[in-house]
Length: 165
Length: 320
Image 1 (cartoon, rainbow over the protein chains, first blue to last red):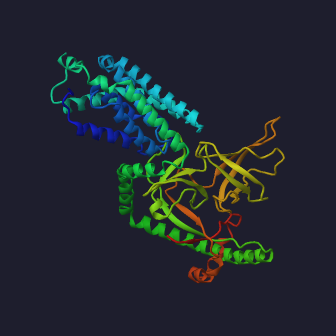
Image 2: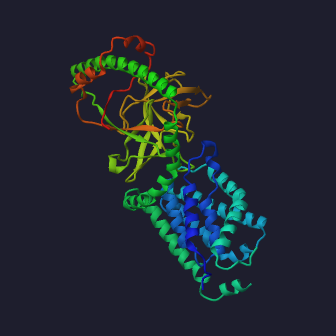
Image 3: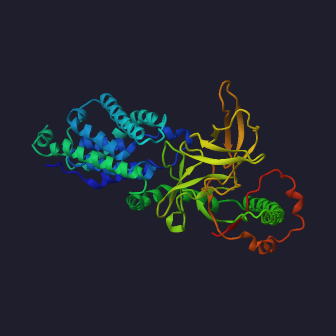
């Protein structure tokens, strides 16, 4: 039985994360844009595993592929795989203290980046360069912030107060 | 921990994490990627999805549009009138240059007719604006606000006032994606304006330089040479400025020079671009009427002489 939760705020949050992915930034900062859709997806999969599964992740990934003009399915595959791992370990990850969770998120984001790197290699596309890895780093650094925002949101969208954290 | 015990009830999250579903999704993703990589099979799917995602782009672009129009509204009268003044002068200079161009074009057409070669044709132009969204953090791509609906097509050349910007790689319905000349996947056939030496300019991934890896050590190339599109390959119309050579390095033992060129178009500052469609018509049918419209200003020729070495691109018939 799924925990009762208001879905619309969460869907809006995911939409905002996707929109932030294409908000123009100065060229210097381009490579440091945190991968917010992946981070929000990890959080949602961790907290509401029955609501947000690999199917959701796949759809978000497809949206990113279109918006970025990348190979259709590249982000989808990576994000679905990251979510799959998150779901597998969500009970352990959820009770980690923040620093351990941040390290875990780093590992998850790096896993996604490696998958995309492999896909590019197999498809014979020009590799993305350093930006892919700096984005993983900035995502890790931004995780505590995202976590804080999402935790607040969680208190709002869950009908009963959560006993975690 | 009542909640966890609820979740531990059989069948629920286990089904979410089932390896079988993941396997199916993996296969689906791989199938999509393979089909998309062949480039032809998923155009419909891609278009449908990008139409669905068009609102996201509009929303992201909206504040930037608003800021721009606010800046326009609050522009002071003095600023406007000085800008107007400046534009009038610029128009004067351009008109003067245009007069000379027409004479040259007519001459060119006569000479070509003498040589029995085909007359160079005019290009029609579509003005597009760059949508303020970042496409891909890893590539040099832009989104422009003209799509298949407006007549933009894949492979169409994109230029700005200073030179070639890139080409359209995907047309969505309401907008299209263009690859800049500096993208690592992009190469453009060029020739040196000075001696018509042909070569290829390859993107470097940085917005401010192109590299020319195929110039032999003994090639006649100097700093400051202008590269124009050669028109070979058929994607880009010939004669538009592409880049200016900035740095030539000879590496001992290497058969080729390492040449770096700076794109003529200001790729990181452009806001409006032109989409060129090469046309089959003869542009010499109507220069007389444009000549009248240009108004043969008596004061104009003075200013025109100042920047003579500038390469003038072929005239284009504006059909917005």
